Image (cartoon, rainbow, N blue to C red; front, side):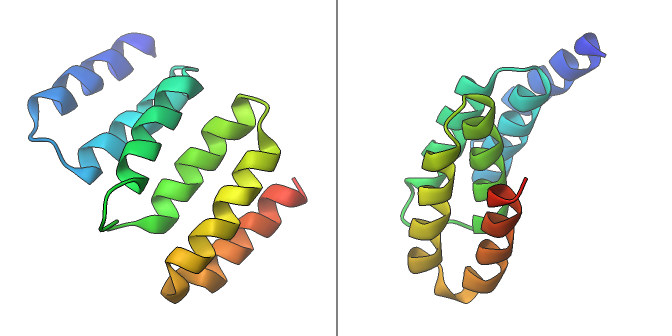
Amino acid sequence: DMRMLESVERYLLTRPASQDRDLSLAAGAIEQDDPKRARELAEGVLAQARVDEPLRVLELLADALVKLDKRDEAEKRYLAAMSRFPEHAADLANHRAALVFE
């Protein structure tokens, strides 16, 4: 229900800025069929020096990019993330494989 999503977004915007808040807003933007906004929010988190949840960021970013018909860019982002976050490389590779064979 759109009103419920809008209420959740209003609530999230009252919370202090954080990666979790921005990723929750990105997830809401995807649900509201606003992949451009979801992409901007996820990219903002990814641009930070320290990323708390790289898998979550990449999942949201890839979802947004696929909805924007930019599947190739989503794949490139996964490859870059595998280098940047080697401790998550195996999980990122699995997510990338799912994207490629979707």
